[in-house]
Image (cartoon, rainbow, N blue to C red; front, side):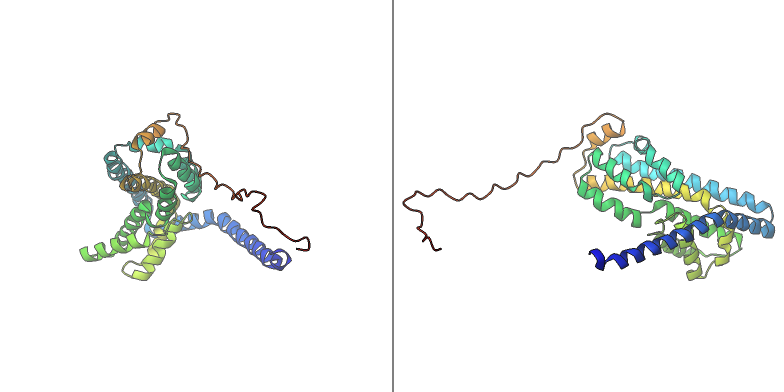
Length: 284
């Protein structure tokens, strides 16, 4: 919009600068906050709390690995594909996730590689972004385990009905909980504060170790979305399993050629003999 839109653009740029400055303060203060949370937990509950926290981390990793290998691996086996070759094919994206603790930066690579593997562009463009908001397997596992851990640490008794209701709420809360790094922890805090069954103050017990679990839940979210896209493509009967298998195995496969639609021919005025052409006066 030129000069008319210049003030709006300038305001957006100034607001962006302020937000990045605030994020810079948060990133610098986050290690101090994590140290304070760990110090609070150890000071109030003793050194033995570190052992229980380590057990929670180990349980979460074991549960996530079993989910990927058994559940997602079974889905891949149903599609006559191998989960381990798929993981090896996305190794660059996994490294990005490990470095950023979130699956969002790996989104373009996932979509590009799935399209190259033979999944239709329309399927990838719909399923992958939707799955990033509604198919967060790692976040669901994390929220459920963390909530039960806090309940046990604070001696909060939960009946079977309350446990099932808590799991249902956590499955719902996990939707959209992984937009940014640490989003799962924020979702856990908001959920516990809303439900009221488990003391929300207990989240300080796991605040210091949340970083150690954020990478794992982001990796599980990413893997689940990749498998879900392949399954939806099979369901839509557009999955070329042979091509996917060869691409995941590292074979050089030519990119899919998209047929170009020929441009419509330009309209040509039909030829008229000289004696049939309309006569125009010189004035016209």
